[in-house]
Structures are given as structure tokens and as C-alpha cells.
Image (cartoon, rainbow, N blue to C red; front, side, top):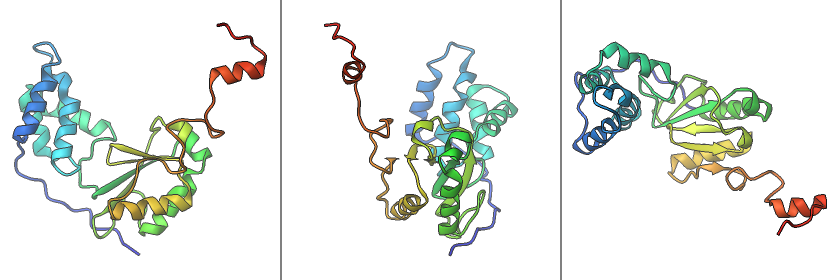
Length: 210
């Protein structure tokens, strides 16, 4: 069983966007009128997080402030407000579990407990090998496919159970995990399968308007 690693980490002294990401930076800035470039702060924070291996150092926030000509404290305010931004290393696989009402009613507490037991850590902790970190977040907007967790801010793993979440974690270790429903459901299809308005109309005795 794994154990949590120490929370200490070192802030890099400087940060610069890569040449490829600077092209994306300019693209995001170009979407806003002159003098309103601060509106691009969120996508730039996301770019910095991706480039830096899943977290945003203070040097990156300072660089974003310089690029957007906005006070560094304003960049810090945005970065500290949203849970999608990580201000410290979170492990290779950052699993963000929705624990709000719809997911909770669908069994998210049991799913999270199974994950904690399998990895040997609790919420807010990272495994000793630096592979997995567990967090809880507010609604992820996938209530119909609850319970769900978000992986590294990108992919959703849906229709989770205490049994299949362990299989997902093991698949992530080998790079073979597949996002989406873990029960075979297609996107947000109803649990009873596919339906269409034409079939429903026939069942209700409604005549074909065509």
C-alpha cells in the first residue's frame, strides 16, 4: 500500500513560455480588444499549467502578469479562485472527484473510499511514487453520468462504481485507461438505452405529423 509523500516542493526561479506556446499566447490575446488583454488570463494560466507538468509556479503567474500588463496580484486572484488551477505539484494523475449531491446520491462516497483504499492515500494526498493525487471538487456538470471524476483537468471518467474505479486506476498505470462511461453507455444516453421521439410518439398514440 502506498503512503503520502511530503508536501514540500521548490518554486522555480523563472518561467518562460515555450516557442510553441507563445504562438498560442498571442492567439488568445488577439481575441480581445486592445487594452482588454487581461481577459486572456485564464487560457494563459492553463497553458502554463500544461507546460509545467500539471501545476502553476509563482514565476509563471508573474510572467503572465508581465505579458498581459496586469498586476501580479490579479493573476494570483484568478489562479487561487478556480479548482482547475494547481499551485503545487499534484502527481502525474490528478483525480478530481465530484462529491456534490447528484454524484453523492449515485454512490460517489463509496467510489472515493474504494480509490483511497486501493491507493493508500486520502483526499489531498499524493502517493509516494508521485503517480496519483486525490482531490474533491464541486459539480463537474456530468450529473447524468454520476459518479464521475476528472483526470488532469481534461478527461471525465463516468458511471463509476467501487469495482470499476479500481480497474480505471490500474489501467492508468499502464496508459490504457479509457475516458467516458465505464459501463459502456454512449455519452449521456439514458440508462435504459437509446430512444427517439418517433418511437415515443407512437407509444403515446400521437399521429405522424408527416
